[in-house]
Amino acid sequence: MSATEWGRRAEALYQPGYASRYRAVDDDIRHGVLVQTFGGWLRTISESFGREITALDLGCGTGRYFWALSHVRALTGIDVSEAMLAEARQPVDASAITVKNITLLHGDFLAQTLEAGAFDLIYSIGVLAEHSPLDDRLAERVSGWLAPGGAFAFTAVHPQSFSVTRTWQRRLGEWLLPFSAGRLRAVLREKLLAGGLYADEVRLRELLPRHGLRIESIGSHLSDIHLHLMCVARKPA
Image (tube, rainbow, N blue to C red; front, side, top):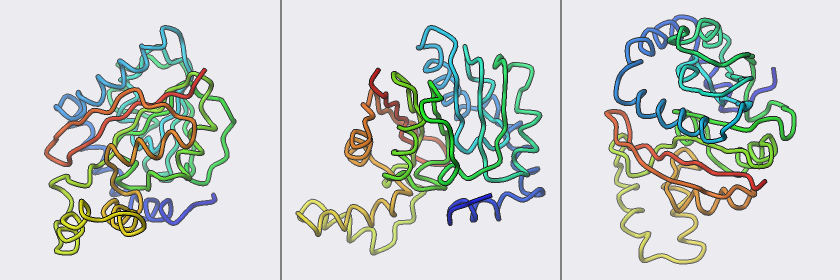
């Protein structure tokens, strides 16, 4: 399996013991506020097509959100961790899943080759701008995999989330940003966004249109883990 630096890091972390503990937490929080919020959001998006669709879950983990999908005839879940995929073979709340066909793919979505235009919905929850960069490379790949009229739905961690360590360098950068311009401003923003490991609304409105993705909505959710952004972007039909 070909993997990027980010993929190798995740693969090293999500070994069988860790994956087992992660799955236990997933089962425990199934009806909690965070999962209900993201799951309800994902269900609304999948139902918005008004027809059966194909879907791709980037970083599917244990299958935490498979139950939330509606009108999905074929779902591909990709994850770099074989141990997490082993858990996903019996997904979270399996009895509630209505997806007709699920394929689990062991791979790094930053390096994996997938069929162009194959998916109506590509989603990723708790992965992008958190465990792997949300950048031009990712946006280009997603745009290529989406069918015309397809939707890209994802969460991201906001750089002003309470979970982001407030170092003196970060505080200084945040103070300087409003007074900066040109190259200095671009450098400061990139530092504050940690190379794509955080994302704010400005970043999303700059990034996604460059790859033919029109933003439909950007919302937020404050959990006990992060300040999350919730974004839906569409590839023109």
